[in-house]
Image 1 (cartoon, rainbow, N blue to C red):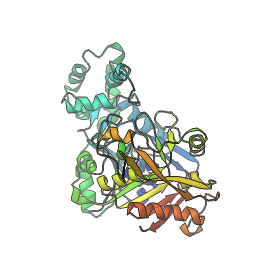
Image 2: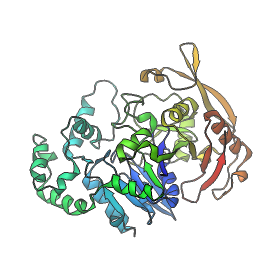
Image 3: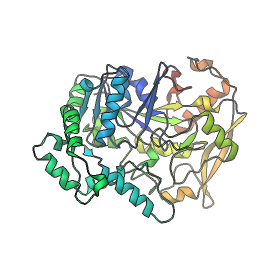
Length: 416
């Protein structure tokens, strides 16, 4: 039963969209298992750019069926907008899309609560996207959420109105909007978990797609500067309705350097010209928020924890090209903490903000063309960078991305 989990190993924005799009060429299903429209996955194909927030990145491949699992929280207007965007670009999606009716709504009242709660936080804010994701998951946990199944119920609108009670005039959704959701999304609801199990039983490849990154996980991440759902590989089972015995591959996606959006600790964050260089050359602006990303160097202790917590079996290393043109590249190989040395993330989330990274300077390399198709044709120092990364993490690198387009990818197997 060949299911592959694809997830980010850092703080998100690792290039999961491109990797999932590539892997979807050999898959029959791509299923999102958590998060909401606070995710932003970008896929580039033949000069076209697709920015997806709810639909799986596999949606760009016309032969791939797409699922939204019950672990998600879904903004119906955002979803309809993405469906219509793909259709305007000549990609039919409705016949390939199946949405779990057990997934929960993100409503305008959630976005209003999100903004209000962020403004009330004393001291440093979380830096949320403002999309209402946190309050939607709060309602889910508090058993107050409205599920998409209500679109199929005769009394669904009554329960919808009750869920909005006290939300304020600006957050109330009209009957016309409800009817539009029901007409557009209602026909797409179905048993996504059963459909995926049927595909697995036939030996078809299924991709289980995560959003955000490992260190934004609600439990394992840099709490409280985290997202509101679990981003780890184990959550793919919970959010998609797939048992752990169905998963045979966990593909971790990591940038060749590190970025973060929002607040929270970032041990290897660069400053000044170094940060500006990475941000400019890597086009480091959030797909969802439009905010400039904080940029820094590769953090091996951070990635070692990601390997451990997710059971990563292979790594896709992205944006290697962004580091081209540097004579030497700092790489954090361990942390100094309380006079000692550790090589993984400390157990207390606040402690990550107090560690000091221990750097090695790895040789840089010259610029190289984005049409390189073989690992052996990369500059020698770039190959060494990949090999040392694989060796430090104990996991093979099976994909190296050297540009934004689908074609700027090198399939390989660099064993540790």
